[in-house]
Structures are given as structure tokens and as C-alpha cells.
Image (tube, rainbow, N blue to C red; front, side):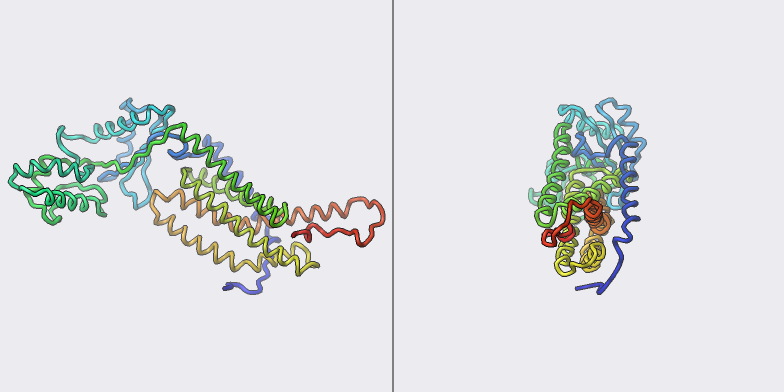
Length: 410
């Protein structure tokens, strides 16, 4: 299927605006990284404890920060930030950076204690319904229900607890209810059961959804391995393309992919996005994606070199890019639509991953045309002009004339 037939766009003639734009983005990215004192790494790389907390109402960020600042129990810097994604409504992320492995568990316990102290934990002995598991709820209700004249068999009690927690965890509540009377719509929940819940349970205004802990040493090791994985991928591709085509083609492709990675990382710094292991996975995906697009164009250039031997190299490369234009637009366009949907509706967990893919696909698509191809063209123009200006050593026999490097492709 071809979207365009017989196109004749002068892509290489328009290369300079794109090259300048790439230089500007690269410099802006490096400047942003220097101004911010480095990249913003996630818990995977810097080590520490990260807790995601959901509140019943709008999170009181100032109150949370003040509670942690006054507690004195937390070692290391504490960060509190809310989510802008609608799917993470009323959620905040509380993180601490650690310098020692032994502080991890202590910091997590201290974080939970600070939250309980700041947002009111009722008289001891009551169970937090919003944070309870099914077995905890069963154990807490068994005797009080019997005393209240609501005896239940074990299977009935298990079903009751499962139904109530399922109601609690179903959107729009999503793990939080604000009034026990909301449970009256659950089959089997009577006013007597609600009274028992009010006496033996309470509703905390927050719920710890997720806690991650990574030791500082592990974080440094993961960061090192992530960098090495990216470099190994680029080196392997350089060797393959140099063998499959010509070394300058491999170098051009690797520079283009490296350019994509640098600009994407720079955009992460400019937009204050966090770099985590999922982002590294996205970057490695982009390395392969961009490289594949570049190889398709280079392969068409190689084919045309066999049938257009007298064609100037720049004109031949333009024709090759035009011939692969439909494939590039269909592949990149459909992929871009997918990652845009992931970026908009994927939620906070996939936000950084989808952001990397969105940036990488845009940058990777134009780099195959306006970065990788011009590098090859510049090199061959340079070598050709160098040979023309070299002093002649004597008469050259026709049979000893060597082919231009532009035609030396295998």
C-alpha cells in the first residue's frame, strides 16, 4: 500500500533547518540538566522509599510537608508531589532519598507513623476499613457480629467481607469510602452490620496504595547497567550496519540514534520528567525503532545505486527517501497514534514511558531522513572533493580508476 506515488520532495535540500533544530534542542537539554544539577532519577536509580497515598479529598500538600518536616523521624530529604493525571485523582507521592541500606525499613515505618499521627488515628483497637484486607476484616467482625445478634457461618462471613471490599475498591471509590452508610447498597449489609462496623472500624482519610523500596547501591548499579545496555545496543548496531552496508552508513545511523536518545533525555530534563527503569525500556525500544527506519532508507539507497549509477548521490538519496515515504508515514504515524493514546489515557504509572515514546518517535522519524542521510552525503562529498584536489602522481590508466565511495557500497 502506498499513500504517495511519484513524490519528488527535496528532503536533503531542507536538511539545515532540522539540523539546526536538533542542535538547539540538544544544547537546551544539556543546559537544563546543568541548571538543575543533573537528571531527575526515579526511585529505581537513586535509591530510597517511595510511597503512593490516596486521600478521600484533595490532598493537603502543605500539611503533609509540615508533618514530615516536624517529625524528625525521617532521615534524608522528603519530597511530596501530587499527580496531574485525572486517573490519579487525590493521590500524592511521598519519597525519601537514602544513603544507607539499613535506613530503608526504618524510613518506611516512620512515613506510616507520620501519616497516622498527622491525619488522626482513632482510639486503638479499631481497624481501618479503607486499608483492611479481607482476612483482617473477617477476624475483626466475627465476634462483634455474634454479640450484636447477627451470627454468620464462615462462608457467609467471607462472602460479606469480600462483597464490601469489592464495593470499596470499585471506581469511583477506588479503595476509599468516606461513610459506612455507603455500604448499605451492598447485598446482605444491614443496619446492624453497619453499626458493628462503626463501633469496631474507622475510615482513615487516606490509604497507602503502593510502597517501593530500593537500596542506594542497587540504584547505582541499575543506573550503570542501563547506560551500558544502551551503549552495547548502539555498538552492536554499528557493527551490523558497517558489515551490511559500509562503515560510514553504520556511523551515520548510530549518530542519528544517539542524537534521538540525547534529545529525548534533554526533553525529560526540560519538562521535569522522572527517569526510571520503564523509561530506559522505552529508550531501548526507540533505539531499535529509529534504527529500523534508517536501515530501510539505506537499503533503498543501496538498491538504487545498482540501477542509477550515473545519478548524483544527493539526487539518488532524495529519490530513495521519497520511495520509502509511504512506509515511513504509515509505520511512524500508526505507532505515534498508539503512544499518544497511551500518553493521554495510560495513567501516572505509564506517563514517563509514554512520554519517552512520543518524543522519541517524532525525533527518530526525522533523524533517519535529516540526520543519518546527510552524514553519509557529507562524507562522500568530502572524500570526492578530497580526491579531486589531490595532486596527480602521474598518468592514470583507465583500468586503475577506482569507483567513487558513493558507488563502493556492497
